Image 1 (tube, one colour):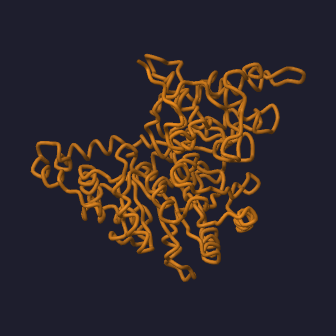
Image 2 (image 1 turned 30 degrees about the vertical axis):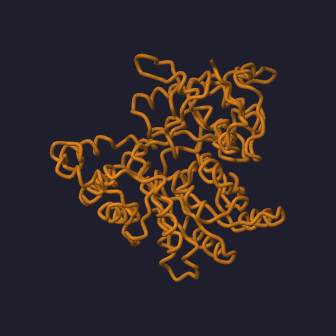
Amino acid sequence: MVFKLNSHLLSRIASSNGHGEDSPYFDGWKAYDTDPHHPTDNPNGVIQMGLAENQLCFDLIQDWLKKNPKASICSPEGLNEFRETAIFQDYHGLPEFRNAVANFMEKVRGNRVTFDPDRIVMSGGATGAHETLAFCLADPGEAFLVPTPYYPGFDRDLRWRTGVKLIPVHSDSSNNFMVTREALENAYERARLDNIKVKGLLITNPSNPLGTILDRETLRSIVRFINEKNIHLVCDEIYAATVFSQPDFISIAEILQEDIECNLDLVHIVYSLSKDMGFPGLRVGIIYSYNDSVVSCARKMSSFGLVSTQTQYLIASMLSDSEFVEMFIRESKSRLAARYRVFTRGLHQVGIECLKTSNAGLFLWMDLSRLLKEQTLEAEMELWRVIIHEVKLNVSPGCSFHCLNPGWFRVCFANMDDDTMQVALSRIKTFVNKEVDTKKPKKNLRWQGSLKLLNSPRIYDDFINSPHSPIPQSPLVRART
């Protein structure tokens, strides 16, 4: 007998769409899952350019592992440490792990700041770290301000199970999407008028999807704002080591060491090794809080998402090798810069420009507004459908990042080899050249008749338009992209 599962048998959380899989951001992943590119088996498949992974330095990691077999407790050389590591279950984490992570965070920030290992709280990736902080800092119905455009996963990470709201702090292309005090005040006032209590401000620095960093004066302005409003500041710094050109990255920790008035209990940093080291599968997330009560509470809550002791042991061994860490950080920046130059040069050849202030991250904020038939978010979605289904590139439309300026797309460039990147550039060039050739008066664009690939857009998350994908659901196993 087949039993049909009725929604009333599930909790409101389980039966809701709070995970956000019905956004174009995740729809692109589903399109890739159903038709993935392979250089020989499926050369015409979809190329994954919607996943912010750093795969440019795995050879360095592999070389280190070969030279340090004892770092793995599952190797013959590391077998002596297997028993003690396997039975360790203190949710404080291995002391060696917390010390190594604190030292690594300092190196990534140019050794201009110091971090106390006793304030390191581990979590199952930055996804778990953000949710834990949301539970610690806000009650259901209370809100965080978030500058746009922002990572679509925040709608899942901070909201889905906590009941916390996110209020966009709007920015636009007129000032390169900078975060301004005026925009912060406007968002705060909108919340007050709607009787929503604001408990904090979430910033990403470097930005996902912009690939920009916040300058010192902007960071100081943000600190003054949260201090005056007496609200928390959560700083997502998971791309700190991906800054590949000047100016240098400035951590909020560096600002707090300056002579600036601020209640340190209000400031918290989220970090991970998913981007800077390219280890999303190891699920190493970090909360660093200046608030003793938050450290204590988050550490208790970390029982629901601990990093395995096997992983802790490996990471502690690797990050304690100062010579390797310094070489890795330096080489990673160099390779990211080289890939950025090649990719932007290829786009420029067909008249595609990217946000010029970007100097970090694993992606570009690409301007395709000139290819829109009109300057609307609906037209952006139409173009995105064609890029997915005809050009066969999974890039993410700006509206999925809550961007109000139509025509911007995030394209990831560090999750593929050189040959695949060249194939992607070739597809982009071919498509753009055809669009330019056919975009003449009284003639329709080639792709205007291809709008039935997905259903009509509908409202997503109260702020943006998003399609309801007919593509079959598939497990989304990669987080924090």
